[in-house]
Length: 339
Image (cartoon, rainbow, N blue to C red; front, side, top):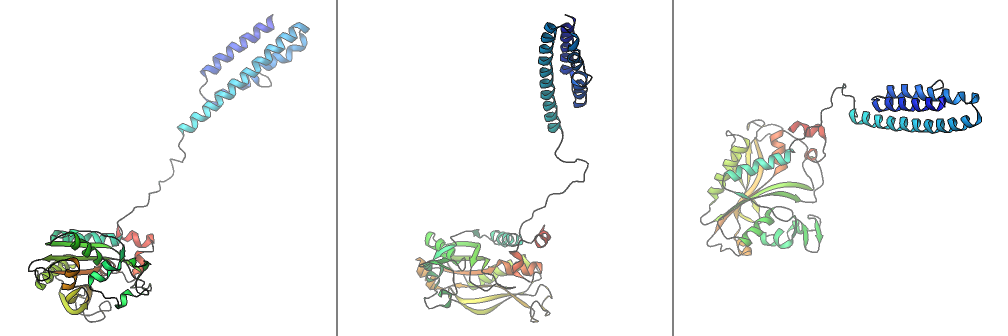
């Protein structure tokens, strides 16, 4: 029958065109050509009224089968073309100006702690670390801090449970090291410490320290002064002046506070140094013989010195920062200044 042959020819042409189709516009043209209101297959279906009943059944059945096949092939190819287009097209407009990612930097506290450590390492010290949750023995008793000392009051120390507490200085590491090793020792101990201070522009309940310890035979106060003098000049500049003032610490005897000439006014007197030309930066002294006895050292044979400084204090002086809280607020406007 001529109509059946025509259907077969339509299917052959459709297969050829759909196989070579490479775009959505071309596919839409194929759909209109074969399935549109005036399409090839639609025209055949409209001509059924002029056929005999037998031809009508045969042609109608075949035409509907082809119509479903054509629609299925078109829909399938359309999905493939859309997926390919999504893969080939970036999910952003490449013509728009780029957005630079945020640039990170080393936190000023980490930067200063690293600088302090580098100076002492260059002087022959090694770096040691220890627990932040400590017993009263390591935090107090071995450091010659008696039970009636104010710092052992619950209001002046973060007690965790029983005799355990958050260390109030990194001196606890000194005790661990001296228990485990024999002199000579030359160690620094950087780390976090905790004291229940009211937070204000110069105080925080958590801050950072770097402490140092040197123990050996015939270690003298002049050795301490020489080491700290080299540190101050390396940290603040070769023209800096240093002085030591008598002070009291339970774990050192004799003890001293260490000052440097004001790095702002050069010692002439300004608001930063309260007009006296000096800035306090650390405490130091010769290790108390009772500390040696607590760790099993012979105080008749060994002597040594210890020192400790607040990292935030040093950083505030170096960078001209007047509020310690700025270090902990994570304000990007503050932190981005230290790139």
